[in-house]
Image (tube, rainbow, N blue to C red; front, side, top):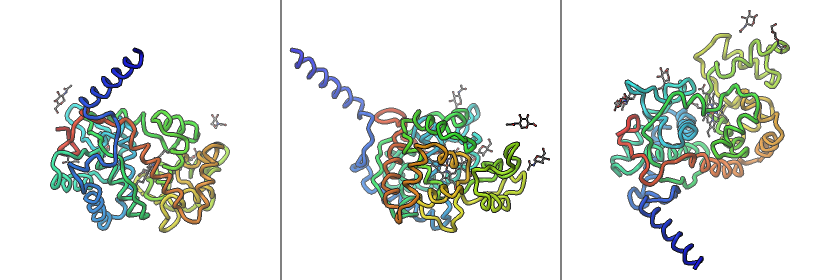
Length: 326
Ligand code: HEM
Ligand SMILES: *[C@@H]1O[C@H](CO)[C@@H](O)[C@H](O)[C@H]1NC(C)=O
Ligand SMILES: *[C@@H]1O[C@H](CO)[C@@H](O)[C@H](O)[C@H]1NC(C)=O
Ligand SMILES: *[C@@H]1O[C@H](CO)[C@@H](O)[C@H](O)[C@H]1NC(C)=O
Ligand SMILES: *[C@@H]1O[C@H](CO)[C@@H](O)[C@H](O)[C@H]1NC(C)=O
Ligand SMILES: CC(=O)N[C@H]1CO[C@H](CO)[C@@H](O)[C@@H]1O
């Protein structure tokens, strides 16, 4: 009797999930029928985009990160402000986001092949993967099936995104935990800071008048601090500095190598060294002669990040244009 009840209960559950067109899960073959060549299509566009401007690789990876941390990976970072709403895009941490036109270019190509079926949130996830594949030849299956949200608020970007001025790894850990990400995810994903740029105001507090006792942040390599002072004279608000001192850093591994030499650019990067749990992950990722182990973990952590707060089934919509709701 009890058994039968249980069975019925499960039958009821699976029926209702069928009716909802999904069970909240993403899957690698989500578009197998509706857009079979999607990953190739997106990566071909990304190849063209990076041929024209290789700095778009970090920009597109960062867009996916900002999308996922604010309201989940729902494409909300792409929405423009409207007459009565200030969107995430307009928030201070988003001042330096780049790649919106490039996402529109990819979306146009995808709509040409598979009209009305692929979300902007999935395009962000795929584009980030294609960028890693271009930069370091590492491809993985991206879990798909996200739907696009219809709301985006500047105020939420301020509270949900980590600040580069965070000097306590425990605060970063708490923020990542609140998104369902682990301490290891925090460290591994920070490896994205091996490529791309930071603008002077995100780290120049470490270079001048840092504290009463030390004008330069003692956690910053002194020689590297001088190099950075050369790029960022006091008051500079516009110069972009490459985050890694190496001329062409290998994705991931050279971030950790630099970090152990106190050459992480932001206070938030440096904080990963001052807490034992994050420090030991950093050490373990800083030495491998090839970065295969890092890339494998990066793919897994990107999968975790890409699953934050996703809309699935009949939730949300498939946006026609990524910058505006339908
Ligand atoms: C751990 C907390 C994090 C903090 C505090 C942080 C902060 C920042 C800041 C301040 C910038 C520089 C923006 C500018 O001035 O142009 C930046 C750039 C970047 N971040 Fe992060 N970030 C974090 C985690 C991540 C994660 C998880 C990813 C991706 C997986 C990521 C990917 C990037 C990339 C690729 C860039 C370079 C963007 C470009 O070149 O345009 N970051 N980050
Ligand atoms: C905000 O503007 C949109 C159109 O841009 C409109 O549909 C919506 O009703 C407006 N909301 C409020 C609260 O005024
Ligand atoms: C630093 O100096 C200021 C002004 O002299 C003082 O108010 C403050 O307490 C000092 N901070 C520390 C940590 O000593
Ligand atoms: C550092 O502090 C001194 C004394 O308060 C001030 O004169 C100087 O302009 C400051 N320098 C920078 C780069 O903020
Ligand atoms: C969104 O904003 C950008 C930059 O202001 C503009 O170029 C684009 O046309 C806008 N898109 C939509 C759909 O409003
Ligand atoms: C890319 C983007 O939309 N940047 C905006 C960030 O916020 C500032 C100030 O609100 C806007 O002027 C930018 O256009």
